[in-house]
Image (tube, rainbow, N blue to C red):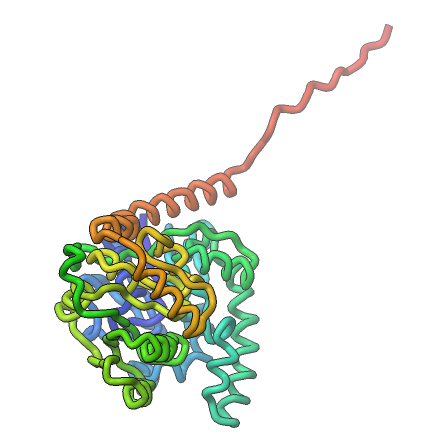
Length: 384
């Protein structure tokens, strides 16, 4: 079985690329197609496979400024020649599912999310642009939505990374989606005893507006409890300048430092709405409970009262109430860590392969003629 994997772009290693690595473990002979490929910024496992760029990758400055070439990506996908592949897997967050597969091939889309900047986050993204760029983007976004919705018909089977994204797929594309949670590298983290958790509370996040780290800073200002923020982004300077002394900012940290932070934190604070959210699972794998906003992927990952606490209004007051509630609870580290075991890489591979098998069987049935019962013989009446 010849397999092609279409990934939106390969210019770094984040959650989508971790999924791609596991897809390559499922289908080690797969060929990779993408818009832009920077081999120096991806893993050795990805570099081992043949990678074909669309023409977008040959445009000036595409490796650093690929987002500027978004208008060209639909046509670029449609020009890829996928003839001869039995299975096409698209890894969708940017444009990827719009490829034209052979009619006999099975196309399975693993959807991290329909493009957020066209749908849920469109008003916020548009508001960050100047007048000229805003007018251009409004026109482009309208055309892209039309193409994006139309190309959903090219997919035989959707697989979402969370129940939240499955609902978004139903709303945007009018399609049902199975759910297979993305893989998390649980082996990097080990549960520790609760007595070692003496470093206060922790936020691990990009410092961008929709992550709502500002809520955590304000809540802990008023609670007068220690908070450590690990991560960087355009809001870093402003948030740090406004924070009280007991809220400290570390900037970006490496994997070893992150594991140490999880191991000593009293709880992770997760105030944003995410499509899935790998950070809470990483924290739970180390035995660190999670206090999370109860929308999005956190509803799939955090078990209220067992592995953490959910709050249901995205306000500093609601977060403060959740912290106070958490302070009255006993959540053993081993129980919290056990809650993360549902999200290991082996579980992802088994779940995704089962969905592919199901999709291929359905495609085979649809292509097999059904002749039904043989017709009843017609009696030819004889004369007397």
